[in-house]
Image (cartoon, rainbow, N blue to C red; front, side):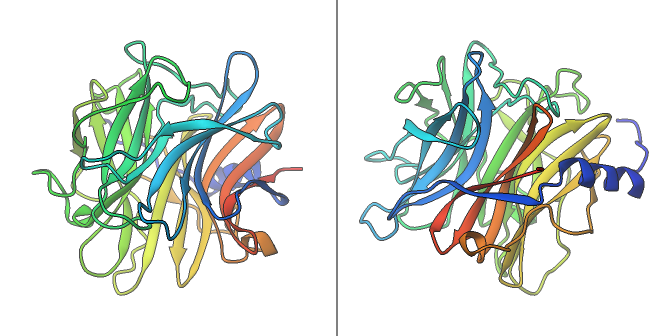
Length: 329
């Protein structure tokens, strides 16, 4: 891989101005008694939108994540459409299945669609067999379907990435979390599929974002010897998590959230080569400021459609945990 030029501060500021969403529209998807989390949004050929998200009901006997989908015609009003990944009676992922659709079109103000590979749609997910909210250990699984319809998804029998794989790095030996998979037809890293995911180390709760690569979506190997996004804090709880990839001009933009000192907010980093990242050090793109997101405003999915930027995120506040959106105007 050729050495790439560093991203300049002028370019970073341009990305911030382009993707800034100062107007909070508010909650767009929430449910009494349930936690709604981890949005990713895409557009179908008929012009309607879909949001894949995680749903979790606290306190029940088989407490854990499942993956659901909602539908919208305007990105602001959403109606639940159905369940994509369910809990099972047994298996390594029987109680936890928090999925995110893979191969989403990363082009800024592009088609916003979901790509297929080998005639299938693909979804990576956080899987686990213990009840609770993100109970360790969690691993990354994969599912596929020839359609996007609820009830049509099949899950691989084993994880595609584990915290005890032979190539596991020190920052990911406790639990693996949310992943996003990018199709790079130019194979800049000599692989067509690139995954970014956050993972937790053993000991002090620190989550960092790392990379993996694949040729077929089923078999994955780690890329690089360490994390690519890290807060550089070793002595207390902190998170870099839930990456989303965007192609803006000649830059790659990774939206992700930071959790530190009991706060959580959305920010971004930029790269020319998918490996070396420059973090934005200015104001967060979204941070707590309203009653509905006063605790956390995090876990981004950002897109631009018809000249308007939409920043979907998980809001935690006086209405529980649900999906909110901030817009550029």
